[in-house]
Length: 236
Image (tube, rainbow, N blue to C red; front, top):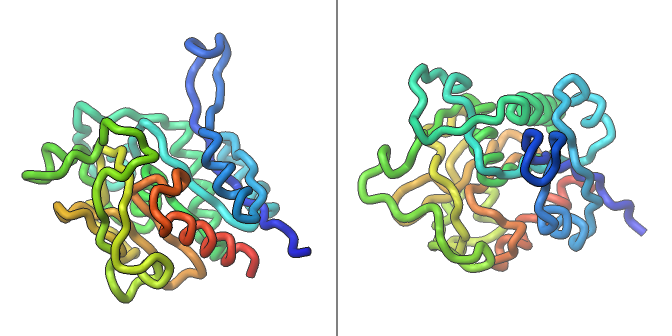
């Protein structure tokens, strides 16, 4: 029986208060269920940048998850911060250490939503800090309906690895107020109908794909195919 690849997933974090009087981590169950249901073995990664390399020594693949926060604009060279931007500095520092370490190792990486945005920044790209102010006539990218339902279609660009995996079009959920502006050393692999970048990849690496939507909900058949391709790369 083939050994399950060990997949690290980054956690969200909140300060003391609310659910607990102590600082706490959180991760939606469907993140781990998506990995485990398709033959992986999911483990959660705490925010300790100093231990990033030791975690990576044990992992076969990395998933950088999404969350209700933003990448610090200073990390992509901007001095002004939009009023809607919310930071989680410790999380970003830890995720960036893990992501950069994984890229150096050519370890398979999947970036989801904010994880895709951090991937773009790690590869020299930049972000739109707030879509409604940056892109005229943009779609509603923060859907009010269940994330188990699609928010809009996404065009997958021919000639990309993502196209080879999922085909020319997908239905995607949508929950973001920022988006990739310039992909840096990555290439764009998916676009929303309004032109907003919905995915990036680095074709020079074994598997380095980021998507703006949340494939762990399995809204579209392509979501499962994406996870299967990622886990397949982690086996190699």
